[in-house]
Amino acid sequence: MLAACGGGGGGSGGNSEGRLQVINFKYPGGGMLLSGPTTLSASASSGLPVSFRSGTPTTCTVAGDQLTLVAAGECLVIASQAGGAGTDGVKWAAADDTSQLFNVLKHTQEVSFTPPDYVLSSATASVPLSATASSGLPVTFSSDTPTVCTIDGSNLKLLGKGSCAVSAAQSGNDTYAAQTTQRFIAVDPLVVADGFAPGSGRGSSNGLSTKQGGGVTVNPWGSPLNAGWEWCDANAGGDWCYRSVSDDGSSLTSALHLPDSKWTPGGWQYSFNRIEIFAPGVTGFNSSGDTTGGLQVTTEKALGFTLGVNANLYTAAKPIVVHLDLGKRNNGCNVTLSTLIWAPAPGLISYAVPLSNFAVTDSCGLSGFTTASLDNDVRTLPNPFDGSGQPTNAAAFAAALDKFAAARTSATTLLQSSNVVRARFYLMDVNTTLKTDGIYASDLTIKGAITIQ
Image (cartoon, rainbow, N blue to C red):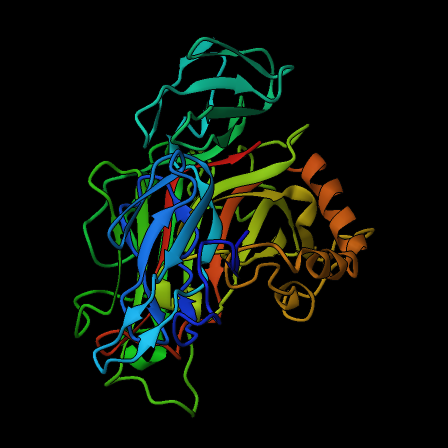
């Protein structure tokens, strides 16, 4: 709330004491506690100096032209000019006071809360929680899913399988506004992977596995790099495409860097970036029949993972196809389910993609199932997020999903009757429009657990 108003302050403009003058008082801006002093700015049409005072000294104080906010509430600042003679000898009457009124807000704070991605009740029945507030004030925890988990002080108690929603809250005080951060913890999910075993180092994409023994293939590839069909290596003429695993094995990055010197818009050029991760203990498909092992979906509802894209790839607005490959095999191929995700922001983002979003895109000739087109249905799903990451276009995304509802229903049926053998993350349209230091980068990073929960 703000207002600029005059009058009532002892001015006598218009009388015989001198010429009329007015004050132009620049709005000092809404304020937040702990933001430091603000310099006030006002000028009188007479050219004479303007003074300031606070009309609400319990909320804000004024010393000279410095405004200091001291408490939340309404702040009234008054600008005055008492009149007198100018440098040219012209006499001016006192100006009517002009004021600015605005709300002083409590200082915002952040609650940092990073619980585990998932917990297994067979390993623990109680999980200690930790969170901090940037204000330094104490944080309390609460469960928003009491049938799955409860809170005892700062300990999480597991009650049953499902998604446990925990809130870490700081209630605020006279200076800080309240803040709550909610996180979801999967209780007894199906674990596709949780980290990566050390591979052959930064470079080619073979020789990788998850910490659970699942095979991993990473393939950033671009035809302009002349790196050889299907394999891209840091040693193939430059550090342009490679994969790397963090020292602790928690994250894997697949980097595709197209140098400006190699990339010529127009003509036939093709690039992609792919990460393929098998279920625990599985390193490939059975070529002679259904693949056993894998993960059997029962009551699980979502695929959970943390995926990051680089800033230029995000700005170029390129979505990522997510595939689930099943153990069911027919006609020499494995059934594939697919959906599309759009990143709401650059950097690492945690996703919980509903399994109901997946559609059958390859039924391998099995009868009784409806198939959606990967290119004409799945890859045309619109971006549900606006530029600030808000899901303002979520309704359009849902409406587009509904257009191939039958293929999604078939996917649900197949998930219940087969097992998930592999998860794939495909960037089929790389960044070719935005470059930094002469490089068009299209990097994908997987961090932490991939779960079906």
